[in-house]
Amino acid sequence: MRRGSSRTAFPLANAFKTPLPPISTSTSPNPAALPPAWTASPLMEKKLIWASYGLSALPILMLLSGAVNAFRMADFVLEGTRRLGYPDSLVPIIGVIELLCAATYLFPRTAVLGAILMTGYLGGGVASHRRIGDPTWPAPVLFGAMVWGGLYLRDRRLRELLPLG
Picture 1: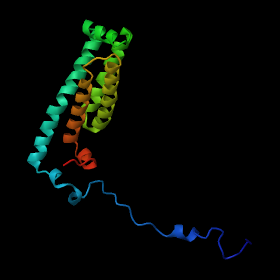
Picture 2 (picture 1 turned 45 degrees about the vertical axis):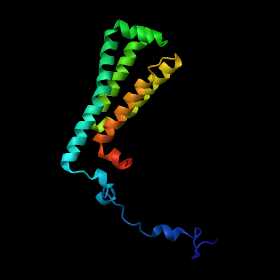
Picture 3 (picture 1 turned 30 degrees about the vertical axis):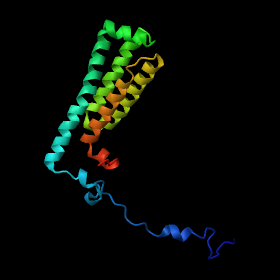
Picture 4 (picture 1 turned 90 degrees about the horizontal axis):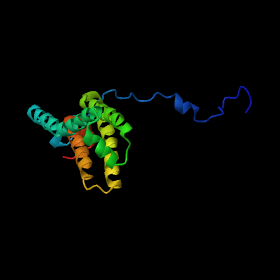
């Protein structure tokens, strides 16, 4: 193509010069788009919150007590760690991991990250117990379900993302 020609080298160049429609900056979902079961009254929201606290309490207490016992280097913790085939030197590290998982799950702003971390931690527990043939392997699965169930009841964004009602 020669200089000064009225034709452009890229025929769709003018198509990119037209303005785009404005992007909606609203982050709140359309209430009409939500399932009727989750457009709850304030009383129902309060009941969901309390149910979520009850459902989340047991896994949190389990992790916190595990962390305390790991830092104490309790005999039963060391015995269980050896039975699973891990060295005693990992016990304080496991305690720190338990504490971090519980702490991130407790704060609403980081609760989803905490649930993801706890899922990974509990998945490692399932793998360790299954490896040695321990029949208590469903316990971490149950605790993981309680973690996500509590978060599901507590966090409206998660209920909107995955409407089960």
